[in-house]
Image 1: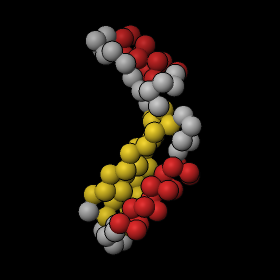
Image 2 (image 1 turned 45 degrees about the vertical axis):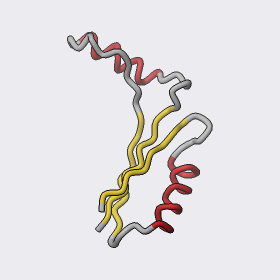
Image 3 (image 1 turned 45 degrees about the horizontal axis):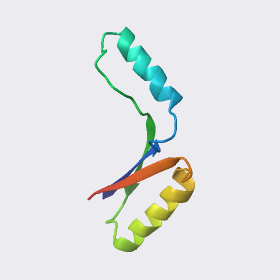
Length: 81
C-alpha cells in the first residue's frame, strides 16, 4: 500500500484573505508572534500497490490540472511507501 499526499497552496505572490483572517484570529487568542499564515488544501491518495515512476508522472499531471489551478497555486507531491 502506498500513500501519496498532494499539498496545494496559493503562490506566494497571490493574496491569501483566508490566511490573513486566520492570522488576525490567532492574535485575538493570544498567539501574537505569528508573522504570516498561508492556507491550502491537501489531497491524500491511497493506492493498493507501489507507486512507480509512470504513476508518479500521472499524479503530477492530475495535480497540475485537476487538483490545483496552476495560474495561482503551487503544489507538492509526497510519496509514502
